[in-house]
Image (cartoon, rainbow, N blue to C red; front, side, top):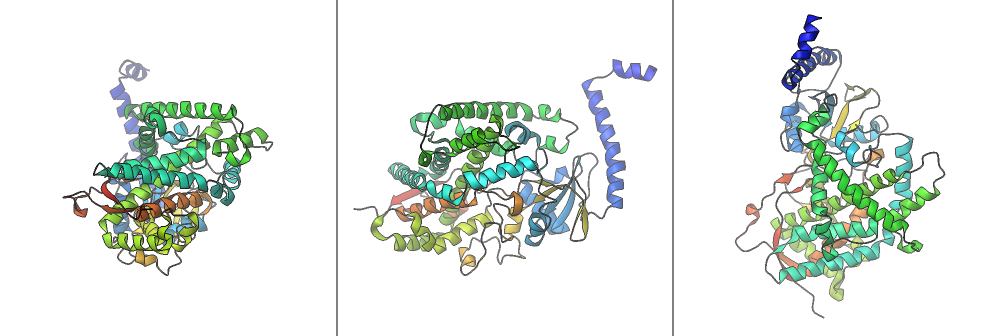
Length: 509
């Protein structure tokens, strides 16, 4: 009793932290050590008490994980704080995770940030496997992102590509063009028009609503490698790191935006051909007589998936694509020659032209190979014990697929770090989930359902940019001068904006 009284009188925050640390240290040394000794787990680098292998992730986890794979093999076991984790970094093992054991690995860990932003993980990406997830994925595939629905937005894509070209042309008159900023507006406008029925770039609304800051925060907060997510029993860590306050601010701003958009849609009546994704979701919600009804928060969570993920994929792919083309002018020249020979004097690239642009499509595949928008695919969580490559993966293990490392694996690719679209000429390898050497959108049950939509938005824009302008780096700048540093998050874009000189070409009547 005297000891308990002493503890009450001396329960300072520092003492409590020390006590918690000691308890976790004992757990790490005894329980986790015992588990590893009796389990046939994959190879693992040495661990530190309490944090395990967290210190080895660095600021660029996709690169750190590839370096660990080079040393310990394409499947490794990491103890990330309290979370047992397996990382795979080869096409063969990605197939094991994404296809062979697709059902056992179909669920998601409940990340703290995803719970905040996605209304308790009721979106498509982060929802745990179960009846609800199957229901909303079915809605997504049949109602929101079907081939017919994607085709119905062709006029939006064409109009926004025309506006993209106009913005570049106007900016080119001033000399140097901030192409990254213009590509960001294009990606945002396409998604806002398709999802919300209007764009937000006009009348200063892009800045008013702070879209860029919202997207940047979204990417960073959902990176999947937040320290707090690896210590679920120590939720106060999120307050200490500032993560909780950032999540509260960002989720509130998204929620206010979505309330405004939903109220606008409920107050309007549209004919079928003019309906956007919010209209479709609200109609599904209204007519839903299934055993899994959609709440307004569910609708908001799905809207956020569409808006943020779709904007990111388009922007990152086009920005990296133009960067690589400027660094490899011989590839740029071949791609431009192909587009201009197909389009001729029409000036405007039609979607019906795209199937003829085989070299440009090879360029896009090479962009996805070297720069997958989501470098480490959204983590999975094993629902039961499984065996991969003879190693036991216990239930409740977090599983990462390093798509960035898979795309650069010398086992799958010759000269893997070189930008060489020719590797795809005569090759059947594609990025739509059937070829595990190239998985920017994942594969299997939890693959991205918006692949067809993303491809259409990227292909049309890139083709038109190649047709309409000749591109150079600013005077005095060479490819070696470009800062290619990434900003790591759930998606990964370049830290520095791409500054270019765009010279209008073939635009005479």
